[in-house]
Image (cartoon, rainbow, N blue to C red; front, side, top):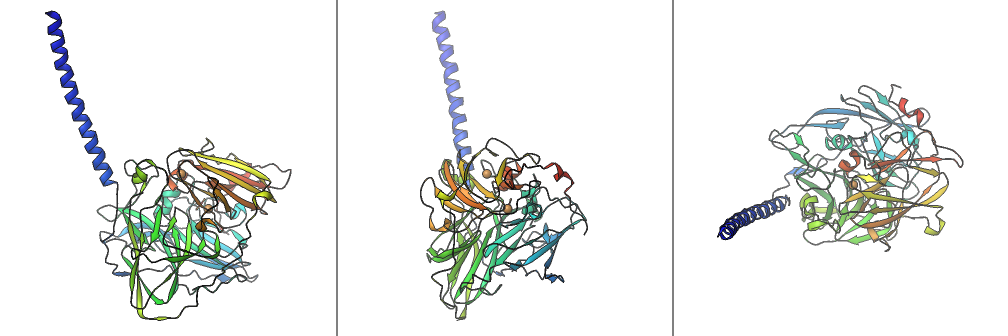
Length: 511
Ligand code: C2O
Ligand code: CU
Ligand code: CU
């Protein structure tokens, strides 16, 4: 009888527990479904493209007596009208949002007079530029408020669409997000394929950032629930425009697309199904145009595309759901299902003729795997590289000048990452052992590394040895970079040892 009583009490308790667990499980499923539903973001259908796309002005250099082109770039804080609720507090260079487009030729000597006109220490890095480490504008080249830093170098690399942005250790994401970034176009007078090339007319920069705004129109930068890549915004800002159309006046228009976002991957194409031609990747022209319907760009990557329009027609450059690779739920919490209209292209009733697209664009003399002197491995996991977090005093890799190196980069887990070495243009040898697809066949400096994937890249380290100053390599998902997903390499003459002990006194100064 006692037993019966006890078992009755137990069964009542068990029943109650089962009900509670069912309720909790139900709540968890409901919460999961709610979060899953909320995780998809889109602006498709919300825009009427009423505003003409802003075009960053071209920076006007002064020419020093020795021929050096001198560009002034001044960090500026201020208010910008980005959304109706604004104005928004932003940063820019020579203006309150973004910076001018710097344009110069291979062979030019350039000096950049970078003045810090904001009240925080920052830096300005020339992403994709082949130059000495001390001129690179990485975390060591800090510019204090009020100071001017004046790096100079000679442009010596293929024609490419590069960019510049702050690179302060631990604060790159925030500074770039506020808008301190711009394009840097390198022309090569010896390699000029017949492509549309009138800046602002048929050669158009598209600097794409995703942002979120609070009710007062100010920027917010919170990481959405479940995101493995940090901040994702719900509003697309292109050159400072949030509802833009581009008036097209020529049969072909060339778009230089820069993904200047913190974490978002875009998968560009047109909803009317038209194809277009990719003519360049990050660090140079492709050997020949690559016709495609989609082009994916991870943070920091660039591409140049050429689009053909008929007189009077309109089409929209849209970002379709990106393919982030093998990720839980297709990467839905990392923007994997998001779609965004970027800019509408509006062709005039009559279009000026464009030269036909050339078959051959450039010579891409990539090194051969057989010529490699060294292979290094880089393992991406969490927000560390090879198990280590960024340390400004530590040299992670020592490269001997004159060598050709293969860097084997593996994403060891289920989160999106990318990889960007400073100093060099690289060529992709293979992706998980397979030959790279055409969009990865040209010179690059930044590459998306999908989960559980190994990418081998190859580069020549021909010059700019300096044992006393490091270059960076890092994940270009900016939140990851700021959390330490970055390392340092030093290029030395054979037999030299790196020595960073003098780096501490590297500070911007008035010149
Ligand atoms: Cu776009 Cu190390 O930078
Ligand atoms: Cu860079
Ligand atoms: Cu990463």
